[in-house]
Length: 159
Image (cartoon, rainbow, N blue to C red):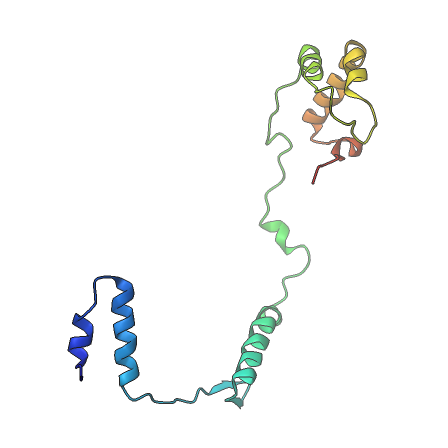
């Protein structure tokens, strides 16, 4: 039984999948032409698939350094003319209060492991009235100056 291309398109095309299957069938009926891909890179001709892939890979690996070499040097300090003077007070944090520190410390869960300082949350809750004033001073000073003590930047994280 012979079908024309028109018949193949119009039969069994209730879904997109069937339409594409019919189109693929039609394309296989047509004579297939083999074409040779030729890539010219750095004055060399590449026709093998692996050589073409290597040339394309080489191009994309070295396109960044090649562009950098083609740019003129601007010097080390030239970027400073584009950056305005820093503003120390660009972010404002409201000062914390001693009551706020105590309230937060009392919300610490008892069943969690201590941090890098190895101080248990139960102990912190018991001495919260004593250490709240120094902590308040440290936190507010950190907000004011924008500097955070290195020991406050360390945290234990769970995987």
